[in-house]
Amino acid sequence: MVEVSQEEFAQLVPPGAAAAIVARYDVDRSDPSTDFFQVRTVFEVVIGFSPHTNDTFSEMRKAAARFGQTQHLGPGKTVCRVRAVLTSDVREGSTVWWAEQFSPWHMNCEPGGDGRRCHFTTRQEAEDFIASSPPPIPYDVGGQVATAELRIFEESIEHREKYAGGRGYYLKAEGTYASGWSACKYPLPLRGPSVVVASYLARPGIGRLVAGPWEAVPDTPT
Image (cartoon, rainbow, N blue to C red):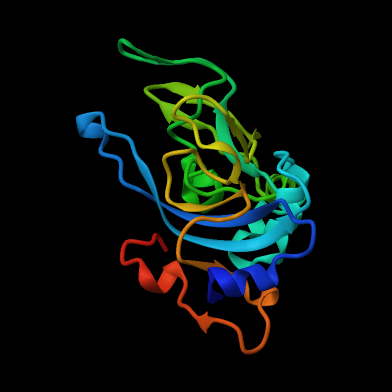
């Protein structure tokens, strides 16, 4: 990635460009214990340009596919979680787990042992995981048999938040209040004394190399 001045950036903007497609690295600053929710963008890099300012997800996806840190937001990408779902009701004392709920006894069958945290970026990958996995083993719960099956739950990475307090239209593989990369569009000209651009958009002799947030941000998740 290369940091350029506004004057240098003007040399990189294609004729007729009306907007820049930008990859953002967000850090979750929320504290649910105090009912405080906030995500803060700590790094931005231009990964493409557009001749218009329309919020077109297909255009954002194509630009995201070119930048290494946002390839998981490219065309055909999504969030698919494989979860073990109960196929029958289970009662233990006054507690009831209904059929169609996630099974607390079969999480070891899910990707990474916890399908809430681990996900696939395409539906095909999720289907392949289920096809290659043995059926969940029935679990004895106080003399009752808890049975489950693996199912796919797909979440869109296309976020539409054009309302007061929203972040506009953007791509992100997790919820709004989560650390990670997103991609969006900003109208030109961009603000600030300098701009960071992806290396493939830069020209020799223009700008200075800069570190990415995985090196510059101490609390970046691994």
